Length: 504
Image (cartoon, rainbow, N blue to C red; front, side):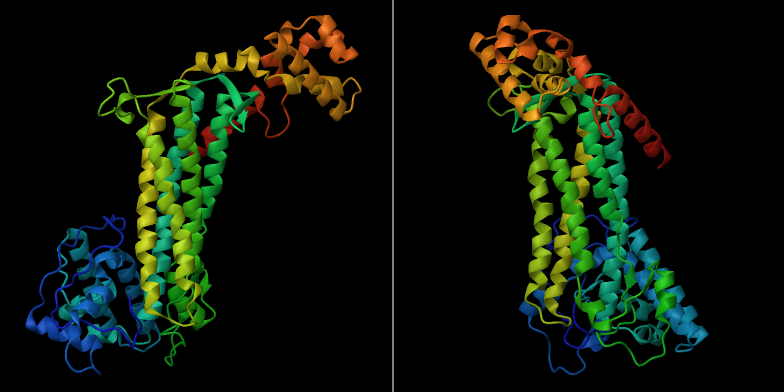
């Protein structure tokens, strides 16, 4: 996508451009537009006339190939048509265009939309981007009125508007997919009712925790990610022109309202030059991908022989090319690997803008391949996470065995808290329990197996009554503070999330 005055169209050179965003999925409701086809002489002349007025001769094929963004921005066809229709209606309402011209434009835009929906829209080699492709086809349909649509509009504000519309729609679609994964986590937690596993710090067994509490942590993390995805653009760039506004008496509030924005952007230069909304959306996608990556890391550990807390079904497991016994959690590993692609988009967008003087530059065309690739990758990750969660089978016995392993000393903190309630400072209690653990390790037993004399040697208060806190169930039940892992708290949160997710 180019500046209003510097962009140019090809005079027939075939594009060597490839889709920088990879195999991108179209916008909701989109159909494939098919390969670009050579323009007819009349169409070619019309495409040239749109942008080549001050130039003699044709554009170099190498520049055309780099300049042409249609291979990846074609997915903005819906946003471009919506913005164009809003602009046309505003031009009519303000008297800039006649009612008859606006009626013809809207009818023509509907016809272009139908061609996209049905997969009949034919791209030409000279269509530099989706905006020029739509304008070229609209002019073919309605004639001279098609050339009037660009009145009081630049491709600079058109591009920025289309992108912000896409950001909002893409965020809503991804947020819906996040909800699906949240439901999968809640359902998995319910399927393993009461299962207890070790809570890990530094990948060392630390304290007992309900499996449901662990999964609800991901539900909460994804909820924060979801809200980030929904925090879409609020300001409409349409009407900012090439960057200095327009001399026509347009109604920017009307177009902003029709397109669902809160208000028009207050500064025309910022409107076309700033890609902060894109960066914030990329950040929200990166946060979501990182959450899924951490979930994948847990799944990899839990499915290993060393843990054995979970078993993935055959449909979401893979084998080895040489070792017949292998059962690999490739999907979970790919959640980690794919997250790298999404996370890297944030730095790509920041670097794209870092050295730019204020104004519109062709560099900004590269925001869309980065965003589209991140979006498609995250959508794939969410679908993958849902598939694995739907075919994951908890192994409560293995989880409980890891909790009950006396060498883990998972109840040491309970003993320290017990000592504090009997008057010791926490630091003194911490030291005493450390001595108990050391004594148990030397004897190769658990805390419950230490005799009273050994306990008393570590601290006199430990001589009697210690066994009352050496219970996993008692430890779990005691954590009743808000956000805690007591069964009553976890059950309340599971019920709350069931209701919230059912309402969506």
